[in-house]
Image (cartoon, rainbow, N blue to C red; front, side):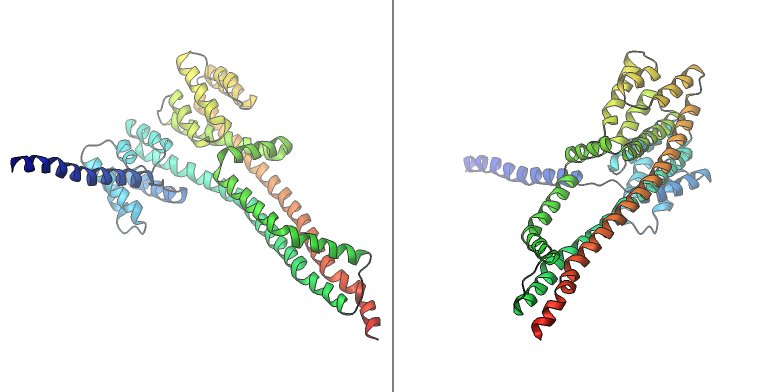
Length: 381
């Protein structure tokens, strides 16, 4: 009897452990799927929190007031969790970090603002930073998405005309025992080739699109190739990247975070680009080797010489924050100018491609009818 009891206990213990292990596994998967809030959500959040803190409302109450009646239930739950942690004695930046919905850059600036007693300034800086990022993201999408849609629609129209309308014209000629010649014969050959190849071309384009979307290596490889061949694209992207990390360094450093940590955190804003590892290496050399910041940037990063020069001036004149602010503004203006030129160039190229596709549809569809019209009429007579 006792033996059965002893045998049963390990079994029960194992049975109890399995659900616990399964629950832990499920918990891990659930946590891994946590997504960070997007820029639009963060802009509204930090603007609201910054305004409430400036009005002398404490941080926990600001979380409570902002979360009340919020349509976004995920954010409302996150803010409620943050408020509970703060009331339990957890630091503000740690409470934000525990949600898993804020980047290292956001956490770092919140910590700096909290330590300096200027949390409202940190929130305001974050809102301004994300507003600027969103502006440039919209400009890039405007310059690339619409042209892509237009070319896709016109390409679809060309394929439809070649596989559906042109064969009908060809059948009409066969019915009246007329053979195509000249441009008509060429148009029919193009139609036959399009009909044979278009499934493979479309499948290849879809496969390439999915590969580029899913693979950072392929995306960076193609982008690097395009940048090496097109100077305007290279200048625009480099300006955007340098504006991004310089403005982040300026924002963090001016809010009390030491320079090495500011550089490391700012590297996260250009993750997936060559600047990411370069910035981290420069921060390590600056912190551990004692080399000046401008020297670390000159030796270990590929930033413009202007950046190195102004950082050197900032170090010598103890005006690093001012130089970082100037560089951020300068690259923001450069980015806007390059973006305008890039948009104009892309629009012109799209216009040329659109004219070419429309001409191809017209020539492939209607030219055979015009050229063979007289023969068809004579045949009818």
